[in-house]
Amino acid sequence: MNPGPEPVLELRLVSKRFGATQALADVELILYRSEVHALVGENGAGKSTLIKIATGIYEPDTGTMELGGHVFDPGDPASAQRQGVAAIYQEPSIFPDLSVAENIFIGHQDRGLLVDRKRMEQDAAEVLQRLDIDLDPSQPAGALTVAGQQAVEIAKAISLDVKVLIMDEPTAALSAHEVDRLFRQVRRLKQLGVAVLFISHRLDEVFEIADRVSVFRDGRHISSRPITDVTEELMVREMVGRDPSEFFIRTPQEPGQVVLSVEDLARHGVFRDVSFDVRAGEVLGFAGLVGAGRTDVALALFGVAPADGGTITIDGQPVTIGSPTDALNHGIAYLSEDRRKLGLSMTQSVTTNITLATLDRYTLSFGLIDHEAENRDAAGLRDRLGIRTASLDTPVDNLSGGNQQKAMLAKWLNAEPRVLILDEPTRGIDVGAKAEVHRFIDELARSGMAIIMISSDLPEVLAMSDRIAIMREGSLQGIRTRDDADQESVMAMAVGVA
Image (tube, rainbow, N blue to C red; front, side):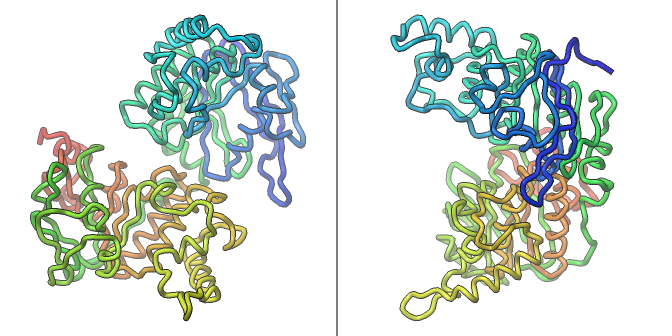
């Protein structure tokens, strides 16, 4: 079946091996003009390897590629761009000190050494207008938001007469409003005849923007279908090889005594009058729109941005939390929603990251570190959480997103907290890794840990929580039990229509 007017990029029986790892095995993929083609799969499914082959970073071991009916063998990214294949990523690679116009035309050799800046800005304005992008060509690109920088990269691709634009997790760092704007640009690309390969872990976005979807698993092509022939259940089953009902795993149990109690907690101008308690073995989910104050409450409990009103009680005793050290001393740990900036030291090893919050435990006389004890504890948590890494000495930046998330969780579990705050614990990881995180949350709750889980994924909150606290505009609107909550009622409270 040919849902598009004409094939643009065709990959036939493409394979790639790295040592003992078969990254791709005889995969096939066809992209059509004026089509958005989603590519989905778990981390390790082969998506990144395919991107790098299509953009000339890797050479395939076997197989062929054709672009516009002709043999396509780019050799390097610059050659791929000249032939009409480009990629943008969740972290844009713009030159921050150059203007928008300079970034758009930086790959154009035809402009020569002497640049007519006025003409360049006029040409940039025309490209931006074609995409309905409202940016000033003369402004520094470094001053733009991530969404603005991505728009510049899209404009650059159009200026190079791109035929295929690969978008790898382009919405990961965007707000809902910015995602809407990006999707308008994607639809404009379709109108201009571009074939867009869209890669995302967010399946709701796939259904919103894609015309067709291909599923990869373990380096193999599993299926390609029109989006109208796909359900989320089918897509997930093909991605992970098992039924979606296995993902949200929560064992019913009677919670224990109150561990953490919060009364009238407030931080001026941010949130106010927040009162709740969490029991041993309970998961208290926090739902609400972005900006509702959920993370701010978590940051106050962990002492990053302390509250200036209200009381916090641990095991019936009032405590003062003015810093993360205070929080850890009182048995509270916080897994940040931003693992790269706030959760992990990306260039350091798995072991170092796991023991970072508890370094005093491994410090010997004269400031020496007991590396044997560090490695022993890190190995135990690696095995317990199933962190997939070649070595404990591997920098966490080399791990997949799901394994980075598990490494961050291991760091806080090593602190043996009474209360664990999980802020967006499955953001940016694939569905298989999500299932593993959910299983571990259930295990921790069954062991008696009190858990606060903040998530923008409402089905996740409803499935994994014993009770759900709903926030709106810095105020706690109410707390519902698991049996007394559904998506409609929770969302109604979150937007203020309940």
